[in-house]
Image 1: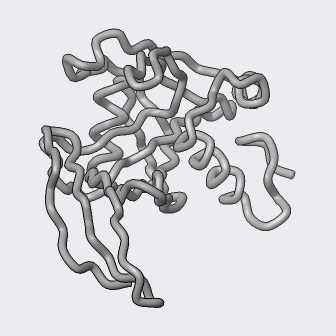
Image 2: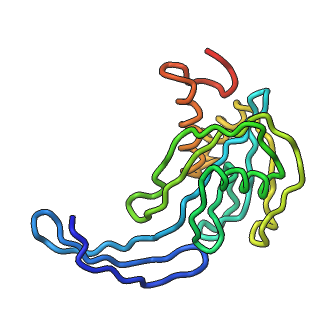
Length: 187
């Protein structure tokens, strides 16, 4: 596919939207609207007992509060090393500091409309501290959930966040082929 031209149609501190005119391999022309966002780090904080730490906040586009793993991007659409971003987001949103941070994989956040990529990290050997949230995160709540509680939330629709679900899938797959199961429990 060939990009014929591209124009920015909107931008703010978090996103930019562009419209690209394209020529497909068959010669036909079309347009794509693309939401450009910087790299996001998604952090799966896991305690020694296998429980998982989630944050809950109001998601304006949905008009609802949602539980999810801690995640975020660098300010002002800047690109930042994903590993550094993961450390920052974990401390900022939860107050937790990880003694160990393991990269689990990379995801395309919404490939049909966005260029954003996500890097998923498992945070272990955790130390509690005080969150230092951004002003927009002032209503954020946090809580620990056992693996069974987490999985029940997913099954019951209480945790529909696609990035968190993808991060959990990568966590399960990190246990190796045929070894997916309850986090923290060897099979």
